[in-house]
Image (cartoon, one colour):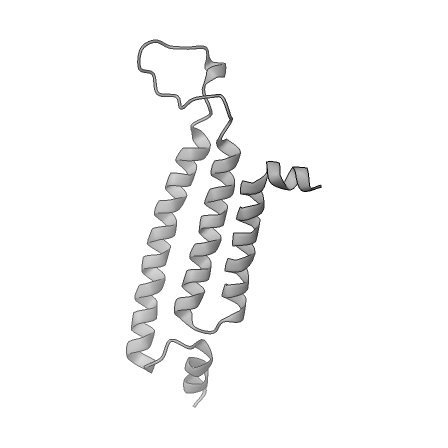
Length: 121
């Protein structure tokens, strides 16, 4: 059991990071902390998929001198998908922060519970 954990330490770390981000998202009512939790979850997913796309002993498909056999290269699609995911995550974070700023200007707080109480009155 411990052998598998040490072999797959990147996957274990990404699962732990995802759990930390998920619990942060669930347990805090502060919107900034929720955005941070969402970013931790994003990072965990990126780490997991990038670690799955890496194969020891193979190299990136960048041809310098001559073309080698295709079995010597890793698949570039997981890495490119994660780069696209990073761009989407940054855009989502920027949008969430903009909404948080607008809510703060209107309600003078970033606590969701307090905003809900103000809206009920």
